[in-house]
Image (cartoon, rainbow, N blue to C red; front, side, top):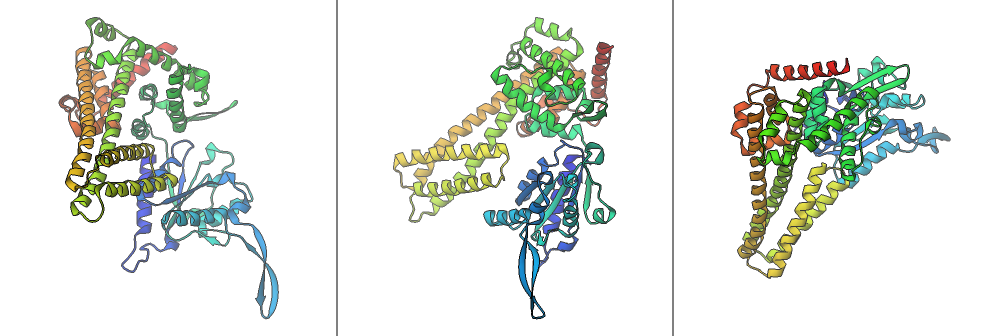
Length: 508
């Protein structure tokens, strides 16, 4: 299955294992709660989805990569204990609590969360001395004498033997005690994630045309050649920063992340063209409706891959705008929830003045923010949104303090006016994004009409996390006009075939 389905399966497993009857006992007894074993190629996101699952289920997470551990850190250190048997004293060997089990208990004490996931990565790549400990862990849910606390779901991950020579295959006895999930790389699933993570437009545009280069592992006489989803994501981060520093991203730089020489050179060449098209076709002018006939003629007579790159550039620029709208909307929504609580409290009156009430709400939100940050319960965007919300609320509180207003309704009106300024900014951002989108459709209709390029444009708007959310919230008549049944992908497939034919001609 793909990584998204695997994530959904783990979420469902956690919820099923945590369901209790009217007496508080688990519906699935702990002894029947099989550990989840994820087996899949490296770099497809097995580790990344665990944080997503923990956040979605609102439970704790403790992660360990077993290749970094010894038998002693997993099992515990031996010590001598005196015990009485039949009136005689004997020296016996006991073990300290495993470092891993201790980390679970520490997380419970720190967060107060009794439920969680213990995630063990690279479980089938351990040393010979540690292998029996891992088998015992999967079969008995213990490390040495220490048991994984009830309510903590075990999830382990490993690579198939063909990807790692250190892999140890599990026997039937072990496999019959786990919930086995085999995971495969899937570009269509990753693409949705990539839009949400704002993966660089050049990467998305390139992979849309050459999906076969998304994930590739090959053993040659010279060693392993591989390209993974992790490699593309990390490369994207580097490209963004190199652009700010005005550093060149050539094939040698790309090859540090895409460790297949042919694919690295191919993408580096494409990236160079991408920058060239970015310079030649000013997206800001196009999206602001400033397009002359010469530019349109130039695109219409351009090579096919150039046309597709222009569409990719436009989508990248639009998605950046949609992402800004989404993030600011999340910020405004988060502030609104706090102000709604503030309004309810000042209406009730009581001994506290409005400023004190608002300060208390901000302090509560700040404590929750620090706790969530410390326990890695935030996604990156959510953490930034909450930080900015606290900044805004503190500025509202300062305005309220300067006014000295003690009347509840009047105090709320002061805060509401500040909030309305933010709502106005949000509305302006939505108008700007809608304006750019309409101009994009003007350009696409004038330049390409109802062509394969238009199908690709609309298809990618449908696939983009931020673009689809924006259109769903704010509408776009022409998007709905062109967005025919996307299950019929003949036009898109024709487009990709044409691109591949051009590439084959160039190579020959």
